Image 1 (tube, rainbow, N blue to C red):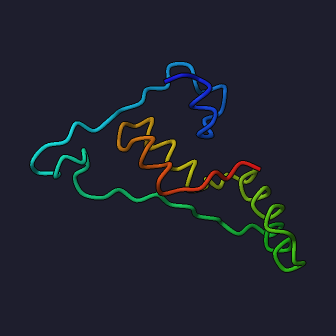
Image 2 (cartoon, helix red, strand yellow; image 1 turned 180 degrees about the vertical axis):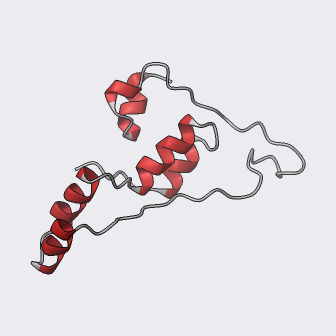
Length: 103
């Protein structure tokens, strides 16, 4: 997979070298989809005191998200990129189920 395509997905440039991408083959058990069962993507935002203050002071969605990511939150797309790197899912599935969350 080219670094340009990976960057378009949201993979940080520092992680594109050696980034492996997998594709499901499909079989009778998975109805030729390449997927067996389901895997969850999670976006969990722990609320720190400074993040709580930003929310209560009606900070913008962008500012809240930026601060949460700065405090370690992974967005759904980021979670998906991790799952792609682990070989658990495909780029196509992450593009289908998440939005581009880069601002």
